Image (tube, rainbow, N blue to C red):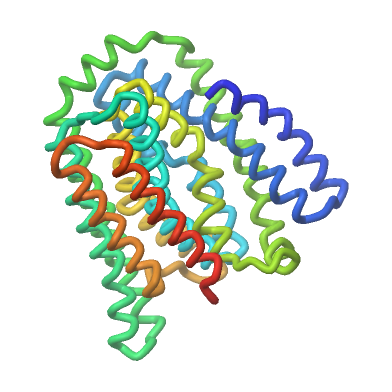
Length: 348
């Protein structure tokens, strides 16, 4: 993953391009690439703090800051009212983790090691909660159509659903910390400390500041890019934004599978999807009440809901037998590519 850090050279380039009023397309893609290594550094700083704070608090840090980069990008989008981009990024993150990341991991790991195994009980538990999360995400859309497009009622329901989802996520973390604490303690003893607490905090703060700055530049160029390239805001949100915010984490998951650590790869892909669905999405609903020109609701279109339902169903099937192979990975990637083409052509 170290080669991604070469993209840090693009941070001043992106800032300079913005101030020099360069082409919005150039500004958009340079700032997107510049966020990639910063997201990786932010993740590294979080992991280092987790080592210092112990398994319980460390697990909480990872659970809340695991998708911090994407959260910062979506907050920047909320502030200027790009609600379609925000909702699309929620969908894209879940689909990307389950289909793209898990698919790539199973494919490359399977080609190198054949059939790979993982903890069936743990992965199946995450997949089950993901199914429940998607059901909850679908309810506001179904309600919206049932009440004949009453936006006020749908917004109020979205807030209530968001509150319940965050509570459920807290219960899930409590369960995970209680029953998997011994695993976390063993991992903590095995992981060497690279940075001090002070250095980790400093890197965390600095990387957050630069990600926030570049996110403002990125989302500020969205509308001109949409107009000039002829793509939809929805497509940028569902495909590009999730990859930009999570590519460092994705690389770690794939590298783990290549090293025959499929358990870690499954934990990253399914755990990140779960965090997006049960924590990031509802948190954005509440933040929109204060930051956005209008509130964010959880009304997803029918195609999104169908794609999410299919993806979590596939994740449940993939985790049921406790093993993966390269063919399963190719199948997951094929589904992701078909969905990506459909999202590109989908008129929103």
